Length: 340
Image 1 (cartoon, rainbow, N blue to C red):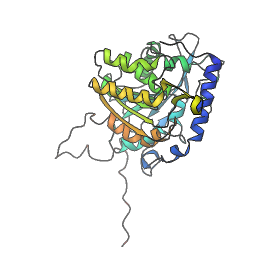
Image 2 (cartoon, rainbow, N blue to C red):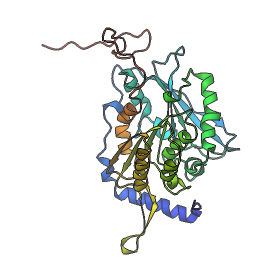
Image 3 (cartoon, helix red, strand yellow):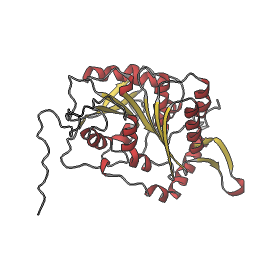
Image 4 (tube, rainbow, N blue to C red):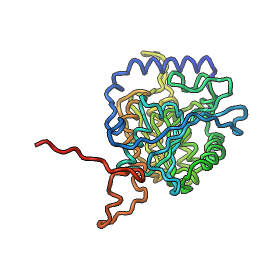
């Protein structure tokens, strides 16, 4: 693996990527949120806890901020499915690009995904460092670059060995790895895949938007690693844009190209390797930049695909599983009378 870029070089790369994304912004603006991402009348709304702090043994001296979405239909007597989002602050935000709580409210209400508890976890930070935010996801102020982009199992230990036991004390979660998903955007996407790669006995569904399967900390080796390794029981949906960071440095005839730093090319290599090895994989390539606009717009469909075969009895004589899903004791929705 190549060594990580020096701080100055990394800073210059970051600034060039931000500038490139700003120039190409109109290609992101074509992606709009649909009704599944908006609050709908009559749909029961789940609750989101306040932010908790999880100390880490995998990364001594750091803690991870996390909060939990609990759907209105959650019944503590029945094990719920689980989905964990890296860069949680971006996925939980009610006015952000993803708006996961609202999407889950709508899809669970229509029984298009199972009753699922969602956890939003931010990258590790030292107590004196600021919490991740919309303005800074943590690349410049937390442990995000190392935790999310390295291919070792240390971050998987945070999720499986540190977070899951805490969640299990508070919620009735399914122990079936097929009932567990993990996802993220950019470096959070490769982090999600790495958790499932190291711990498929705990997570078997992965959602990846604008995934950084590039040479930040050696992530460009994943396609070859997938081909060399025994197939793992992982289902994955990848999204990226043709105008994602393309590995070009400089302009005009002087520009150099680094294929291992080409986000879109590396996403395509991931799909090719996963397909060759027989993985359950789906993907879509839009025209966007390194942006969350398309990923947010199609999040409901990505979730429907990931959970497409969750166990649901289907009996022509039994309509109980074909109604809108209301919490126990709730009154059925009232259909407005049609005007003559």
